[in-house]
Amino acid sequence: MGFVSLGCPKNLVDSEVMMGLLDRGGARLTSRPEDAEILVVNTCSFIDTAKQESVDTILEMARYKTEGRAKRLIVAGCLVERYRDEIRKNIPEVDAVVGTGELESILEAAGIARPAATLSPFTILTTNTEIRSGQESLSGTHKSKGIGFNPYENAPTERGASAPEVTFRPEGDLRERQGRFSREDWQGAAHLLPTYLYSEDTPRLISTGRTSAYIKIAEGCDHPCTFCVIPNLRGKFRSRRFESVVAEAQRLVASGVQEITLIGQDTTCYGEDLGLKDGLATLLDALARIEGLRWLRFLYAYPNRITGKLLETIAKHDNICKYLDVPLQHASPDVLKRMKRGAGADIFLKTVEKVRAAVPGITLRTSFIVGFPGESQTDFETLEQFIAAAKFDWLGVFNYSDEEGSKAHALDSKLPKRTIESRKRRLMKLQQKISRQAKQQWVGRELVILAEGESSETELLWEGRTEFHAPEIDGKVFINDFGDLANLEAGKFYRAQITEAHDYDLVARITSGPL
Ligand code: SF4
Image (tube, rainbow, N blue to C red):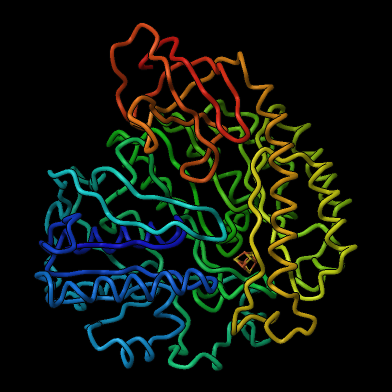
């Protein structure tokens, strides 16, 4: 099988689950699409550019049905949730579609019989295989790499990939009654919302190397953000069982993983549907106690859910990365009100201060949408001044994308593309200056670095990350001096000194290791 995973890390985990299911069914992964008999494209349809990339990739893979050995082309993911019938009607080469809530039907789609439960349904891939991956997502970028491996290779018990029980939050039920999750205006979209959640027993091929892995702790979203179609694509918010997440993390660490990144559309809501108070903080506290777990972090916090207890937990454990990713989307109260997110620059500045006071030295990442309908020059300047005052370590700016099915689609006062683009450029220039000054403070610091491999830019350098860099999203640390070592090993941790700083990237010299 050949697999292309587009979009964000949440989609990547879905790809890993589907690859795990196919692998257990007897399929073997190849990085050469021309050799694959089954080709799967796991699509993203968050914004226009992502949709276009998904369609282009499907068409590119369709060629292998005539030019390669491909017998089946399967399209999975968010594009299917949105344009199920259109894909089948307009791209006849597509043999089957698999929505985000139907991951386990990938086996039927591939024409592979469901294997009977065996003592250990898990296998490990023996060849170096790379899955192709896309780049753009509103939440950041990712690029899959390394050997796909199954962390449950030695799972000792008889388990199947049973469907977990799904519960919802009253907030989600209420929003559903208000039509929040309706997608009747999407031609071809199935009307049933996805409810699937994978469990610790679902096979998964980890594609992010042997050292790092994502764990999806929740799926869907109940927030009413007017620019966003994710709730329509992914369904109501539901958390994975606490014990299931802990068991998955334990298995990953037992198989050699040392960095775990928790993801979900909103990780800070974790456990609300399970009746847990301080669900994410409690989960982090439990996971941080797993021996051998060196770095633990979570992405995508919702600003008004950053509690004192959560910050206390981050500060308390050495192995919880001092890193917080909190997409704020805007800073003007008027724009945030129309986005149905609330708050504004003053409240956000207080949040930033609170976070920095509770966890000294913490790295903050955020992202903004520029050019939301009706964004005035004053709104934009509020955002600009806020960025200058808050001084984030990492910042992403995305152009507003007018998505059919989102509430913002119906708003008046859309901005010309030119204005949106020039506002984005202005913010990125401002952040470049902030980042350049901040990165200078890093020079001379000695930090632990995860060596990731030879640089994609030149073989004279290696690339790595510190705890202050999340996988695939933030700047890079280039290693130009191995110190006393003849070579470095990818996936190992070293101590290193920062010797140079650029706008976003750093340069380091190894001082000792591997740790
Ligand atoms: S919090 Fe808002 S932007 Fe994020 S997934 Fe939920 S609805 Fe979309």
